[in-house]
Image (cartoon, rainbow, N blue to C red; front, side, top):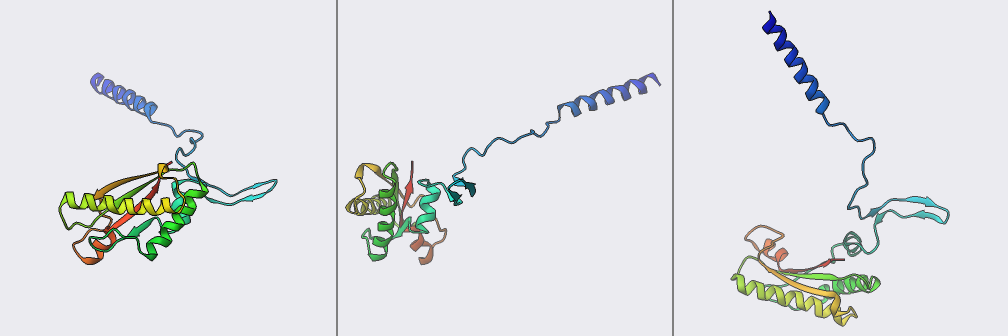
Length: 174
């Protein structure tokens, strides 16, 4: 009987101790640390529109609506008319925000050697950079990097996947 009483008291004490250690929800949550989205608010001057904060990567992607990426033919790094239109839109955004820098990533499909694809990706990224510079963007604000075939966006060994992977992507970095 004494043993049973001790066991019950021990179990009760242990469960009370565990209940005391249970984390409690905070009374107020901290602000979102990485939010690039503003919300609509009423001010004395009117309503502020919601959407990405101006000059952010989210604003860059939203403004360009898919024109942050240009595509290339097999083994090519030339800029065609549709690429020129996308790069012109990128240049306008970059000129609008002169304090922002951008990185241009060159990509290839899975065919070819690693070294060949790294060199081709570099040519693609530099072709995009040179076009942006010709549109008035300061070359010092642009960096290039080639990922070759290391970062495919489409997985597959067919023409559709290869066409999506032969690209240069402009990313606003700061």
